[in-house]
Amino acid sequence: MQRPYITCHMVTSLDSKVTGDFLFRKECEKATEVYYDINRSAKCNGFICGRTTMEESFTQGYFPFIENLDEVVDRVDFIPDDLSGFYAVAFDTNGKLGWKSNRIIDDDPGYGGAQVFEVLSENVDGKYLFYLQMLEIPYIFAGETEIDINLALHKLKTIYNIDSLLLEGGSEINGAFERADAIDELSLVIAPVVADKDSKSLFNDSVISDYELIKADTVNGVLVLNYKKI
Image 1: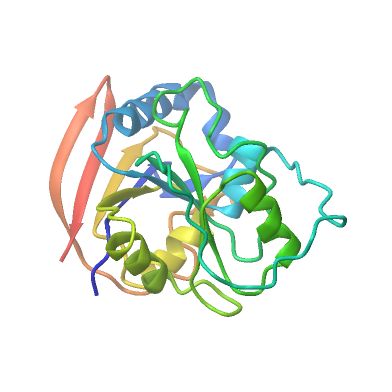
Image 2 (image 1 turned 90 degrees about the vertical axis):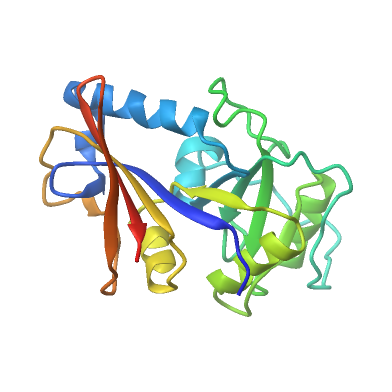
């Protein structure tokens, strides 16, 4: 099946955790900056995050009042004519993200200006679809109640010519992509910290997969490892 090349790009602790309080420690600052530098220089068509990461990073819990909107019941992909070509792809199963613009507003050039692009299941409120259309936010459907990752990626590749994306989500979406055999490369920036028991791992509910180390660099005193799927 045709799909974009997917690189899972993450900061991890020494014990392979990707979310937790360890990320806010002073000892993680260099690793975080290296991570963002790689993101800014990556030659790809955008990045993917799940609902939780998009909410924490960009929408900050906002959700519009949509009860008075006219309901759109047709579950048909919506693609405006003037797409930018650099995308913030949100895997938002039930349509819960409250965007205020169809582009990411952020000072970081690796994110700012990215065209918001929603991937949904058909289990989404029609009023939410109308809201996205009003903002001219493109969306596609990829499953009835859950998102079929490979179907979503196939659409992004064959219909919208998206060739490569960074997967920058948390444990849940990373694990879903790993189980779907949809990760081609790992780009791991290793923070010199051991996380606590409440921190979350790189993949939630993973299956056995094999990778080979293709590159190991030290950048500003931080270890960066690249692995390719075998």
